[in-house]
Image 1 (cartoon, one colour):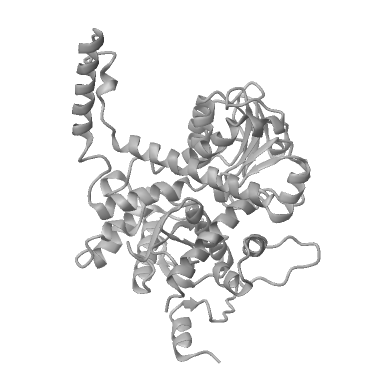
Image 2: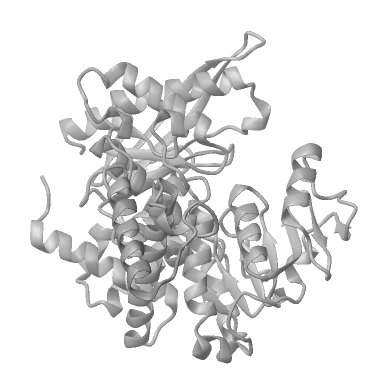
Length: 501
């Protein structure tokens, strides 16, 4: 029997962790030999890591289950006058730290289990990067390409209203951000809607979402944060001689060939950064086909072509294919940067890279990872390297609740301090600096983007150092090392504070 509270909560669309639910999209049992679904796969990692971390099973069960989920149906009047009811979700995985943090996804294939799994992944990422957040995730089950801007805006604002009514959004409660199918535009609509409702009572209402345009309280560097975080974290491994020797590769990005699966905003930014560091992009895989050129692909030219033509399949420079065969060609580095489960038990044996860098959520399934590791392919897991978006979202959240941009109070003081130091050097050694010309950069104080990028680099480097140490101590993979580190931090938080009411 459900309690009176549980009945009321279920009726309102809120499902506490102790309530048994049976939504229509609940997954059927697995068949023999079938791979675990995304949420079940994450629970397997939780179980393995929890055992290695010596976490009691009852407490581990608490840590891996989702605390709260919301399912609503949003009414939408289409441009043609017809009415649709569209499913929308929000999952808060762990509320041991508040607010919870996670993106908003617009994809017609999303379901409740996917939201719970992605929220759990965000809890792990936040813990690995030492961010003071629990994990969450949400989305609306639409293909945004099939809806007009007016229809998308209406849905986004109605979704925000439902989140606010159910207490699923707010600077101290739950802070959404952009994800697959959304951008700064949708975050601006969400912020505007929330502030219209709560702005007069909540001085920190601006921090209700992150990933906003700069004019709406956003922060410089947020749009490239995930890709830059991947670049920084992977660099810690790629510049490690011992690690690269095991793969038969030299250190550094220079001269490395890489193939990119997913050429969206994250994939494009990663490609630009790696090519600028000396790596060669030889293949791109998208939903409508793939492209290969052993001499290298210019990411800027391909991006402009894709923006104009809405496809890469007809790109004239290189060999174009209507399938994903390029994903299985030889390269030094393969980077999946699209949706989850891109590499699974049926295609893992065809992968020919030496290093796999996961730039998206859950691109490698549980069984696929076992196949890749047996082949000697090193995997840099998403829970370690793909947390840059969360990190810079944290910086934006801090900026909004501080009500000032990073570096604003100290920039001019730092410039004066540098000038005094330069004058001292000139007086002692007789060197004259051209402070109005080629040496002007020596005086420059940090801009917001400088602070954001240096802080992101520091966070990712520290996360890599900690996870590598944990993995080595437990003689396990980097993924399990990240889970062990995260679960221990969650466990310590609950042990010190006790279970919340």
